[in-house]
Length: 365
Ligand SMILES: *Cc1c(COP(=O)(O)O)cnc(C)c1O
Image (cartoon, rainbow, N blue to C red; front, side):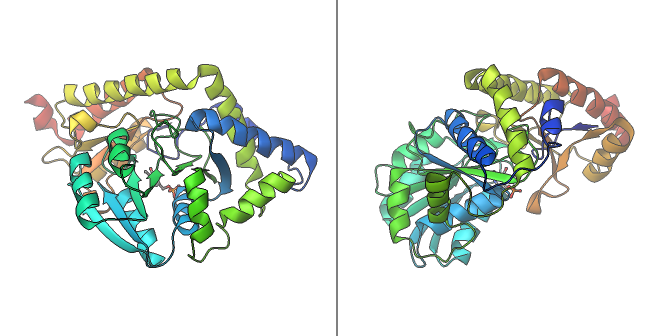
């Protein structure tokens, strides 16, 4: 099977093997070494000297941790949304009682930093701005450098969903002054699901001291105390996934971050070229098209679900459909983590065959 969805992503054999190792005591010496090493290693890929925490949970848990550790009920925040993950981040803040103002951009487009600037001026000040770096549901990467500039002209915190970009698309956390950045093990890390990793700036920690939202499992104060004092996590961590992440990151270190980013740039470009060469159109505006996921408009007269089923059952290639309001309308190719241009070639070949079968008249034209 070729799993070409934007998470979980395929894992190299060495990473899978790491998961078969025997358990260790999470209150013992071996674990202390493991958690310290992995936490340190992550800083290279986050391009930061900020604190990093590895928490057991999925990316959404990381988003929730970012919100509840920096905000209080009633805090005015700005949720920038360009798709369903932007909606989710804003919704978490709303559920916990933040006063969420929203700027929504048309799905398939990126957030316009000038519009964000206007809203910050007109409706601010905001305690925090919530933004998705790479919107996996629409295949769009926001111009985070520019968004950060306008946000950092104010006193607002910048909370960034980098779940499908950290370690694959350039996201220099320190240079772009991002206060909290969240990612997940099953995206660009060539690792199975189970862990969410996030960075906390000094300003984020200052906000933490004031933050009154209820929290228990996601309390980063506890995570910080356990890591500093005991080199442990407060709760039992996903030890097998930590083993896997260690091997995945060793492989990433060998390749180096600049080369990984370059590989994703090439693979992203290859995916877009492949799609267009088959006469299909991109859902995302091309200037902001993502290098980790490509969203494609369902061709006219084609039942997208049937086409994906055919690709899966007869060719062993698994792609994603559309999420929420894009269900049945688009499909997506995931190309993050363990991926090469040859993988994209394979997807193209299979997509071409499947299209010829589900829309014979179209391909004859
Ligand atoms: C996958 C993803 C999430 C959610 O991650 P889960 O691990 O499924 O909770 C959040 N944001 C983005 C941008 C994602 O790609």
